[in-house]
Structure formats: C-alpha cells, structure tokens
Image 1 (cartoon, rainbow, N blue to C red):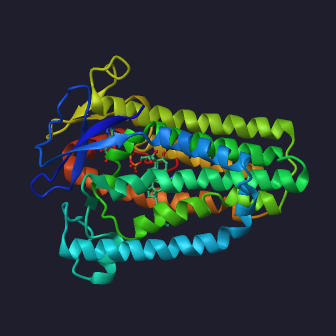
Image 2 (image 1 turned 60 degrees about the horizontal axis):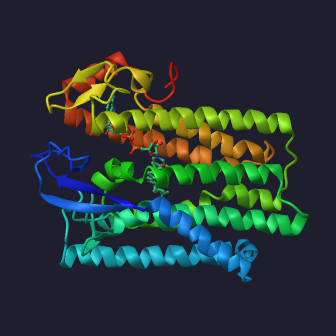
Length: 358
Ligand SMILES: NC(=O)C1=CN([C@@H]2O[C@H](COP(=O)(O)OP(=O)(O)OC[C@H]3O[C@@H](n4cnc5c(N)ncnc54)[C@H](OP(=O)(O)O)[C@@H]3O)[C@@H](O)[C@H]2O)C=CC1
Ligand SMILES: CC(C)=CCC[C@@H](C)[C@H]1CC=C2C3=C(CC[C@@]21C)[C@@]1(C)CC[C@H](O)C(C)(C)[C@@H]1CC3
C-alpha cells in the first residue's frame, strides 16, 4: 500500500521557502520548522477510482453520458474553485496555519486572492494544496478521456486509433505523475507558490477540462490515422517520455542521495549552500531537460488529431508559454539561492530548454 514522505518546510534567512523529504533515514540538511508526513498513495487512488468506475459501469453507470455534460461541469468546477479560493483567502486572513507565501502578500487583496496568501493551507494534517495538485485534476482528466473513448465506441462501433493513442499517452503521463508522486513535493508550486485562485482553478478545473481537449476534439472530428504515422507518433512520445523521466529521475535521485551509483559519476558544481548542481548527464545538455521532454510529449498528444485544426494544438501553445515563464521564474530563484555557482552553471550550460535554439 502507500507510504509516507516526511517533509520539512523551512524559510532560510531572506531566502525562498523550500521543502525536502527525509528518505530512508537520511535527514535533510534543512533546519526543521515543521515536520510533516505526506501520504504517498496517489497511484493507489487512481487504481481504486478505476475499480470503482469499472464497477459503476458494470452496474449501468452511463459514463458515456459525461461528454455531453462537460460544459456545465466545467462551469460548476470553476464556480467551486472560486468559492474554495475565497474560503482559503478568508482562512489565511483569520487563522493562517502555515507560513504565508512570498508572492501572495502584497497587501492588494485581489492580487493576493489570485496568487494565494497562505503557502500550505491545512486542516489538521490534511494539506489542501498537496491533495489538489495531483489527484482530483489528473484523475478527473483521464476519466473524462475514458468517457470520450466510450462515447466514440458507442457512436462509431469502436474507438479510433487516434483516440486510443491520445488516451494511452495521457494515461501514461498521469500514471507516471502519481507513481512518482513524492517528487511533486519539491516543485515550486508546493514550495514557493501560495494556494490561491490561480492554482486552485488550475488544479481542479483547468487541468481536467482543457488537458482533455484532444480527446474532446476527436469525438466530434474523427481523424483517419494510418499505422506508419501512428508508429512515428508513438516513437516521438517514447523519446519525449525518455527525456522527461530520465531528467526528472536523475535530479531526484541526485537530490536524495548524491552517492547513488547511477549519479555518483556525474560532474557537479559546488554551491555555497552545500548543495551541488549537476553539470553533466541530462542537466548538462540544457538547463531544463525535463521541460524539453514534456514539450515533445505534448506534441505527440496533438499529432493524432491531424493538422487541419488549431484546437488540438492549444495545449502545446499554452504549455510552451507556461514553461518559458516557469523556467524564467526558476532561474531567478536559483540565482538567488546559488549566486555565483548558478552563473557558472549558466556559462557551462548556455541553453535553457532546446539545445542550440533556446
Ligand atoms: N503538465 C503540466 O501542466 C506541467 C508540467 N510540469 C512538469 O513538472 C516537472 C517539474 O518541473 P518544475 O517543478 O518546474 O521544476 P524542475 O523539476 O525543473 O526543478 C527545478 C529545480 O531543480 C533544481 N535544479 C535545477 N538545475 C539543477 C541542476 N543542474 N542540478 C541539480 N538540481 C538542479 C533546482 O532546485 P534545488 O536546487 O533546490 O533542488 C531548481 O529550482 C517538469 O518535468 C515539468 O515539465 C510543470 C508544470 C506544468
Ligand atoms: C492557466 C492556469 C490557471 C494555470 C495554472 C497552472 C497549473 C495548471 C499547473 C502548474 C503546475 C502544474 C503541474 C502539473 C499539472 C499542471 C499544474 C497544476 C503536474 C501535476 C502535471 C503532471 C507532472 O508529472 C507533474 C507532477 C510534474 C506536474 C507538477 C506541476
């Protein structure tokens, strides 16, 4: 069954908030302000939801009716996100239970409501942001996809190859995120950003309803897809996933245990904080190899929808903008954290996301 990651949240003098897990008895170097146990059972939650859905469908739950209800559901989820964020904002004013987010305390109430005042709003040990970041949105997304596949089968006798590919690729992405759930604890969303309307809406409404746009498109615009093209798209997905997973796992392994045999031979730059920066392997190719892999996968999700409409490419365009902005924010934070060592890293690895291009 699931395990638990113990997380330390601390604010070093003048620096950004950050989190680290204690793994296998190895204690984090951070000064402990609060010590939290986060349940790591997102993958089990996905399997359990799938079993319950399977059971529901077998006793007549009309999952195929879901596609017709997407617009009202998206509206209801957006409204719920708004009300939930208002409650979180009020709670942060009256009874903040965790540190305040560095960006969400400007004094401008609209701005703070949008970015989130409190860093990790909790009820007892239940962390709302941690829960919402992965589970409802990602699991909701793959179930919307599945409902679209079932509806297509009902309409046309069987799901199309394009629909199978989109469902399979995105299920792999969600399964991967939940399987490696622990690594979400070190993303800037958890460590640095407040839990305001932007992230609440992003997690609960934006992800399930816009990330499923390719499958929604395919239901209403069936696309012929030949086997050779399907194989090429699969190859692109595999390359993207290989880079994405390789880069994320290499960094996570290195951060947990730099003397792990799989990373011990990599070249590094020491920093004044005592941490080191990888300067060979995936992280010696570009400064954000994981973003590169993610973008290649995004393209592979859209290509099964053909080239005649822009809508299925919305995700690629939005995601490029999101990652370029995110990369710039991360660079700023790393420069603050690591100073000269970061400048040295940028000199040695001059490209941000795409080698020789950007
Ligand atoms: N599908 C979606 O909508 C989204 C997906 N993502 C994906 O989420 C994943 C996580 O992304 P994100 O949280 O933005 O950031 P990263 O996983 O890229 O983490 C950035 C951090 O890694 C550490 N780091 C950077 N360079 C090095 C190096 N050379 N050696 C060692 N450590 C280094 C630094 O933190 P420190 O030194 O403190 O460890 C830095 O702050 C990515 O794969 C991204 O593509 C992200 C946003 C949206
Ligand atoms: C337009 C708008 C309101 C944007 C808000 C941004 C959020 C949608 C994204 C911010 C960071 C995210 C991450 C994922 C999903 C999208 C959001 C919430 C993520 C859970 C996707 C799966 C990945 O494997 C991941 C776990 C690394 C990733 C974490 C960041």
